[in-house]
Image (cartoon, rainbow, N blue to C red; front, side):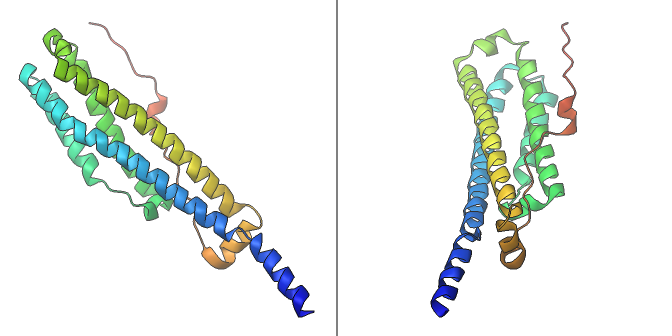
Length: 191
């Protein structure tokens, strides 16, 4: 009888999902690290971009200052893996990153008025690196959301949900979402 009870206990524990939920939690952390790494790369490129543009567009101080300010705000906003279950914290982080993207877009629009700058090899290299970084950020966000989906699904489906409610008490993680303003199409104006 003890043998059968032992076999039954092993079978129940092997299908409880404990290890799967731990693995998925680690995947979310790793994916979040990749998002932060891509965002840091963008932050590292910005001072070089601003300095390159300053030489050509000295009278565009307001735009350059907006980029510098947005970078400072975005680098101050840290979000740990533990805070990924806090919708308000994730929303604040996304807002800071969105402001950074907006400031960069304004800067690149200003650059259009400076043909010499657009032809400058240093600027072109930085612009290509920044474009590649933006692509990396997008890919990292998508992979993060996929990891969050797998994690959230694993803690909500049976028998994992039972194991989670009895042992782990893991909370669902928040997805990386666009701001509501992103749903509004941009207005394109030609002078």
